[in-house]
Image: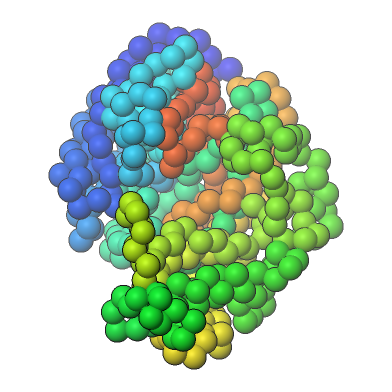
Length: 460
């Protein structure tokens, strides 16, 4: 390949850059880390300048800052590619980690730290890909015009991204968006994700008596909101694992026989997935669908948090005044987040027992599902680049998680292509998150090859 061999010399610089960035605890969901999220954005601006980008700016959003950068190609007719990523990270429970979450530690080919895989490691891979592509095209400029948008609120559901995209639509104009925030199937099994599920979330509060009351004096005689909430949650699925919200499946795009056959051909080891990735002992879900279908192309409803009454040491025999839960829904094409939350409100109103009341509070606008057009030339170029660098046929996958990619596609009017280099067992969002260094380095090489491929074919 054109850029092969260059990464070995760059590995120490790559790790130094990534390690420095991982030490900044850019947790967007926690107010006490607000200044750290800003420091993270400022660090990235400086790193983009070091990588060669002549333009790198902080964009204020009304929340945490994002970063924009641009490096024009020498050829004014070259394709324009926007790279999207995020520099904020998930919260941590430090006691659950084997190493300090914000003091990265290397063990062999693995680098441990919050954000190593999601998404700082993959953003740094793009910085090095730009350097490689620039060098391979003569050192004057990269072969395609590269624009970069790295958001500071992706892990908090991107509440300001839509406005940011509309405000800066002209500067973000491009031919396609590349997102590197997804995993490959395995270290030697290159794959490209072509779709992500959407997200709708909310909180439900169920109230009974005006205050906690004695469970001996009143137990069995008045409604218990904890019981009522438990019953509501139990009724969210039927005995076939299907979600029971009214109209929940009305917009779900059915899978074709060919799509199901393609998923069935993927080398998926369910037992290994349960043991190493899910860290669970059983695979369950909607009847009639495989595990991959359930987590990639079928919608889901999950309880994310549940609490009520007294939870301290010892006994406190009460009927609690309230019970609470956080609920999220993963959506597939063509479901809409606002419609799903409305359906949940209707579900609660129809099934709430006498003597309790409920409030459902939506978690925001949600995230719509995203699907890459199969005929996208950029997708085909990515398949060639990744397959060439990894030396194997590239498989097409989906992702059960969610991101703001549908918003990017809609506002900018271009296809979104996912080219990520994480692995399923990187433990993103969990304790002991890590990234496999050699996969990121190969990923940077593949991205550089992608820019060269697009430039060559773009010139006809």
